[in-house]
Image (cartoon, rainbow, N blue to C red; front, side, top):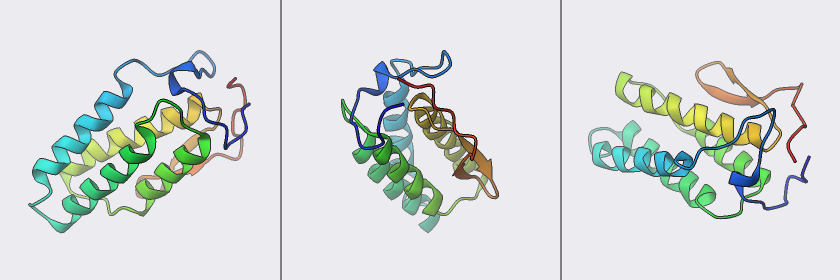
Length: 127
């Protein structure tokens, strides 16, 4: 397992046969664009848009560390959730962040109202 501050290409990471596809980060940017268009409809959508901007600022790099993934997850967990429309996309963001952490050798689970919490039995097979 790599050190949590070591920066590597997320596309070079693999864990238990799982890796990221070439469109992974494109989908994150599309989510941001969707929320930008809807952000003027409610305070919650605006806060979710701002969170996506911050998450993408952290993750949209050639090299990222697990520490940065944890920072993005913290932003996700601190952002208000709710509403049918945003819940659909917000759950997709949950799945993306969970998969990204997994290929870096850490496993997160769903807890409570869509919070990402690191599993105690974190996997450590990523190289």
